[in-house]
Length: 407
Image 1: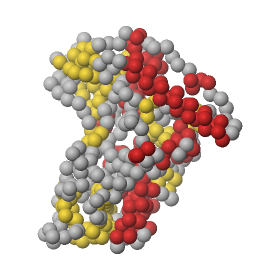
Image 2: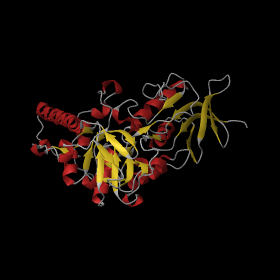
Image 3: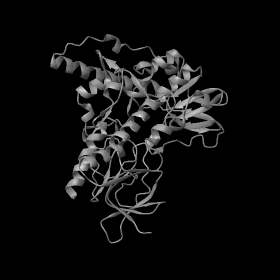
Image 4: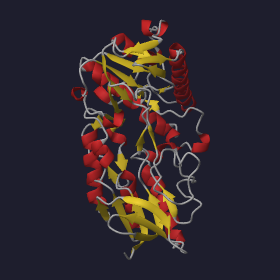
């Protein structure tokens, strides 16, 4: 079958692919966007019903397209984010084909051009931008592979009614795990929450949301080289109007905290020691961040109210001072396990030597060593906010300029 030819091919029709198309259109570069399912598919099918976005409405935007809202300090639902991305697609009017999956990307025989293989036939391009996002492969440990308990990754969780009766074990206390655990607790479920290494930050401090602080301190512009050793995203939430996640507070409300899952046998989970130390480490990072904000206020003479309540520390609850060394799922009548254990990339379909030993793309700011091959929308692509709605546009502009220069 003869290959269709295009100057630039964008693979992925989520926020990154749509924004890439918008930047290419601004520069008059002919291109095509392929999306294997629907626009913003992961937002549509891999988010739970009660999810609240982590960033306040006033901060949400795509290039030349702010989030429409009447409550700037509120937090959007996943449905509202889907509608926003779909509205941006109408605004940007990308040349997109939905329902077309790229099964293989390779170099052309004896050519510098790329060949994207699809069920509809091959597409040949001078440039390819892979914009398939950072949440491609749900990471789900197989500790309980031989146990009949109901298990689901956070990407497949929808609501409490989806789960069988009984207590629920949530493994992972990042943003998703913490918000899901709270939702289940409010629904009347008995909840166990396994807490590992985490980054805890205040939802608001001295009259401003955390997003304002990150912008003011220019942390969103932090580069991968400036990133610290901790590789976990902050545990923050927009649920219930947004509040600071405090795991001791979770325990005071009735959620049982556990340490890191270590091993399992016959439905009995061995739990690693050190839960108190884990919480203390999270507190240290939290206090250090408060100190950073206070220092900025002092240095710039800002007239912001004091916030002593943010430094209050609850006493360690019994589940921390005398932590469970193991959890017997049958004995504790645990009916479901939710793995909020993060995501990995899946670029096995890219048949070009551009990946490292872990299968992750090797690039600098999304530009690879293979002329004409780019990546967009990955976490820390060039800066902290590279994968955020409000940040992907900057990276897309850089890549579009690079493509234009190649022409």
